[in-house]
Amino acid sequence: MCQIELSQFRLHRGDITTLAVEALPAKCSLALIDADLTEPTYVALKFLRPRMATGGVILIDDCPPISSWKARDGYIRFCNE
Image (cartoon, rainbow, N blue to C red):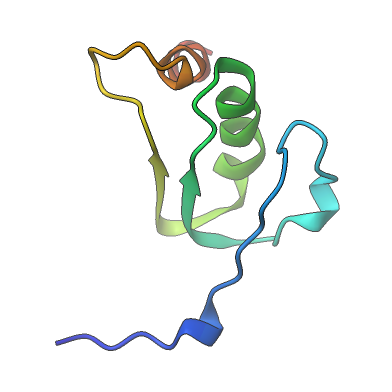
């Protein structure tokens, strides 16, 4: 079993659309986007993707192919660019 030290993680809570880019770490290995809406999901992906470490993972909550949540719209917009 793999054991992970929680002090290695930092939680950033807030509105990604108003968060200063400098507030985010230079490199991330794991990111959870739980915004449920189009624009915050899109902005989060734009901010986080360049900061992901090799092998890093971005998880987007409420983003299944069939869903009424708008997070998928932001994800699709990001992918299309």
